Length: 355
Length: 86
Image 1 (cartoon, each protein chain N blue to C red):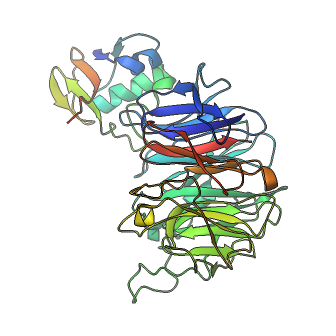
Image 2: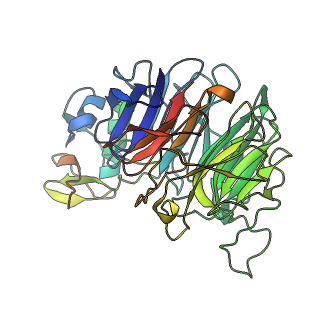
């Protein structure tokens, strides 16, 4: 039985089921409120939800039982008296240390928790980075949407911000530097300076068994890094479109990555009315279509960047994605075949599968 | 002291009471005083900049007010989520 935790436009949904069959709604919370992201911590089992009430602003909530009482986490705010306010928390990620978690938000901010998520603190080095004044927001805001810890090394972390590129630390967030060599902003004017930080990264994932390898879905381009995010090579050739948002990896195979292409930045739906996941098993040299069981006619779906996740790995790899039309699709065989897991849900903002 | 009334989740956060007698010369001073008395309210009405959140309305004696609106000790302040729709 796999648990799927969905952040939706109308609350949090917890589903349970097996790939190939319908998943059942086991719990719902924050009914009617936008839940941008939700996940269960893989070690503590605690569930987290980021909720941006249109009235009362963004908060992080946590609960041991999603059907029970939720508590508001402390410290999820920018410094008082400044000229910026926290707009949204985009994602929450478990760190390598027992009680450490990270949360990324808009405007390009990182929060850290050292007590299992009850209280959070703004990462000052990133907040006060001298280049911050030149950071440009993407269409969804200045969103810090990807956080990639380095397995067994809590000193190292990679972040991605749209549209401020990739950021790397090797001292637990005490200092940050950019890792953008090789990224090509095709959407930028020809006369834009080459060192521009207006780099619209859409999603970043690390290959946990070979942590210096990372994969990136860019705003036009799919990239791979073999040096921990310092430099990037375009591996998008062979895809029907190299535009998209979601990206996932098989933890067992550092040469693996999955993307769900969308037609273009001006037409953010599945190309040609066909829903297809594309897989590489050779680090991006070639891509294979994985669409068996997915809608192949008149299906113009949008999958958001945090609505694609996995459970298990290797031969037990399960893949799941949710759409803004309220559908969830599941594969229990590493993407070879797919089936509907749920439908008629609110627009899916995020999907996290519990391993 | 001015009378500040909150509703819905704000009431729960403010000690389970709707009506609060608070001191302050402006709306934002009253709301800061409410936060000091009930720290759980912090961040729910005012954002980090000290601005009233976009979809919350504050009325002073029935008239729409802002952060800097002056208040007198016998004034009545209502804090309401915006009625929105389409």
